[in-house]
Amino acid sequence: MPEHARILIVCIPVNRKYWDDIIPEIEKDIGQVWVARETDVLKKRVMSELDLIIIDVTEVKDMSRLVAEIQSQSPQGKIVIATSSPTWGEARDAFYMGAADYIRKQPDAQEMVLALNTVLIKARHGKGQKSRSKRDPSG
Image 1 (cartoon, rainbow, N blue to C red):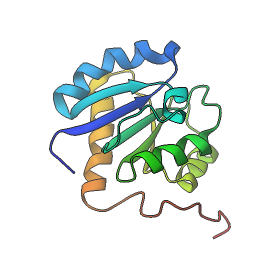
Image 2 (image 1 turned 90 degrees about the vertical axis):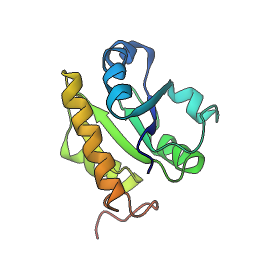
Image 3 (image 1 turned 180 degrees about the vertical axis):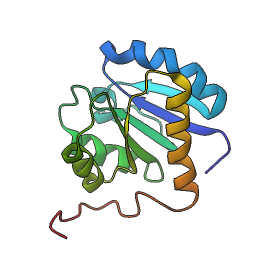
Image 4 (image 1 turned 45 degrees about the vertical axis):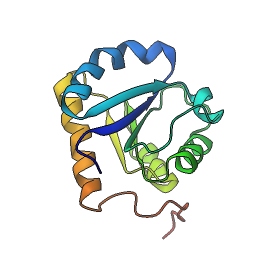
């Protein structure tokens, strides 16, 4: 993974303000950021060769389809699910779909940068998102 990561944030327009406030810190500390809507990703209007894909799950219509499309467009990218109110069930489902991590959206930009850097460090050390196939939750 390069020192300056290529990052895509997938979010709905109403959540863009949250990300616009945090993007400058992400770009300063981690790498270049692009923002796209779920519909753009599903229409294959997203660049490939991403290092990190952050999906803001607010109002995502079809998470499994979205994750599968991202994996096909950018297979080396680590997918992170971001939410304001995480639950264990949602996190488990995200991991089954192939996400590398599931994080709470932090109100402080530096806390969010720290959380994202942690994901990238794990990815650099080969942890997380080992299998892209759907796993059977029963084991």
